[in-house]
Image 1 (cartoon, rainbow, N blue to C red):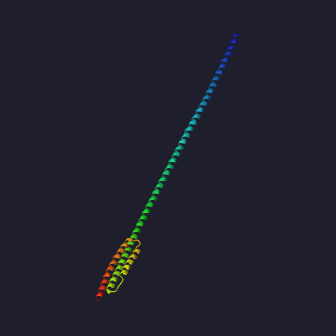
Image 2 (image 1 turned 90 degrees about the vertical axis):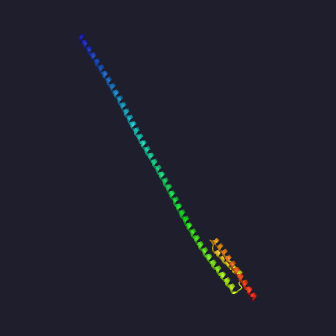
Image 3 (image 1 turned 90 degrees about the horizontal axis):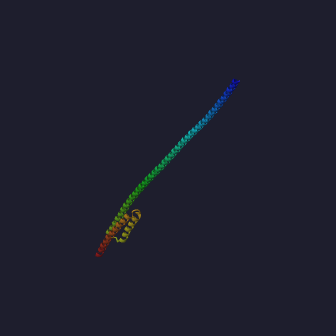
Length: 212
């Protein structure tokens, strides 16, 4: 009987031990499962964090690249604006140079025209002086021939004719007033000389008539 009791006790003890072992194993397995779950969660969180970091880095790189592109575009625009300004300045300088050339050409043309006008005026003055001298010579010759022939001529009329010729010459010389005045002075002097010679001839003629 005691042996049977002992066996039963042993069996009970064995069963209890087995149950304890099973419980311990279950606890270990549950702990292991829990640990594995925790590790998995941690790994997943780490992976997510890594992915987020990678995404952030990629976004930052993209933003930096975009900023660099924008800066390059701005620099290009500034360079283009500077080039346009330089071109405009060059065009303005070219236009000023053209205007200066045109002004110089215009001034040269004006100078040439003035020179031509001066030459024409000089030629006109020379012609007028020649005509005045010729008229004065003719008047002097007429006065002398009239005085020699003994005709009683009006010396005042001859002087007036000489003065009128000088005045007509002065009117024709519109651009050469100084030369016309000089020619008029010469004409007046010639008229005075003609009048003097005429009066001398007249006095000589009258003295001859009185002696007869």
